[in-house]
Image (cartoon, rainbow, N blue to C red; front, side, top):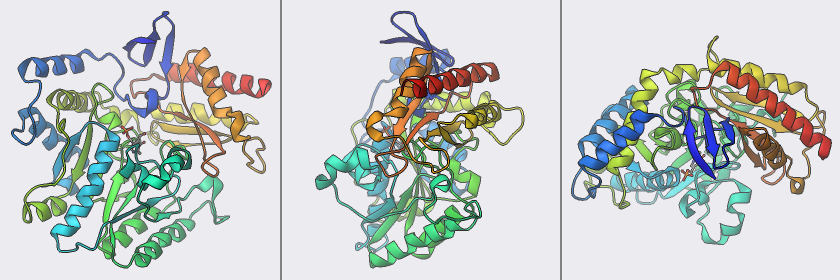
Length: 434
Ligand SMILES: Cc1ncc(COP(=O)(O)O)c(C=O)c1O
């Protein structure tokens, strides 16, 4: 039972302290217990707790939307933001927005949203249909509408067996998108992707040229490019949004998690002027909504969080390519785990990292899935006062074990050093008892 949070720490009801080395599920970016966020929420609650978006907007929603569009970059100038209560709601909104855009521009035959295997876009049925995460979707498959899922580049386990560190295979993966779009015969409305694979594969970055090729294919086929940055957005990878690392300009950006750092349920769909104009000049309104769109208290939390991110230069702190940042300290510390027999790969960017475990380092053979190696490492970490995010399925959706490491950006180099030593000890202990 968790009762209190401060900085990178969470305390349970028995007084035990845990270092939140994964920001729970990659949520908290600014640290726990920041007074100015709860003050902003309380002030908003006192002033006006709620109005329905069919009747009113609010100053805080308008102001935050303006600041968020600016944060998303020049490409989103003149665009608009739709606030929701989280990642899945935002993904559902993006799917419907892509469909409505196509109808508004006179393309009613376009309704499919393509996506990738080994991806995760959320728990609701539309988001689950777009997801490729086998374990999370298998039971619900009879209930979801299936569109094509293309392969996901994953250099550690590259399907093309390339010998050039994946310098060229990205284009082969991207070609799968063109094939799928052509096979759908003009029915594709959009393509949804995580710029970095989040939980499913574990902090996998795309190979050179891949995302640019994907963007170019979408543009050429009039397919909207939808970047799901629920996990990677709002500074987590050391850029405002992860697509900025590869100079890719999506038509629609989806954010949640770090958007409010967990202080309130909040998600956002950020759309370009092109998309918004099509609706404004067409039917005039998005045919979609939730009661709690742009909830004033959640929006106040997000607004205060963005100001905190900027005032404390937390995006810069999360830049693992810059010497002296906590993100570069995290990268160096995690790299030392490569020496362990059970560690097959250490990968990531910014403050989003994964450690993948293998039974055989040379063949990259995974542990038997039923033995839940990652879960056992997670439990061993917990006993040592460190929270990580264990996952399985990186090999084939079922087997393959990794833990995600993604601390709040206010972590210090000393705290990183201590937490990585606990993780090392947890891995060694798990191997010993296995
Ligand atoms: C990339 C991505 N998209 C969507 C979601 C769904 O977000 P939520 O759990 O807030 O509904 C997640 C959650 O982990 C995610 O990582």
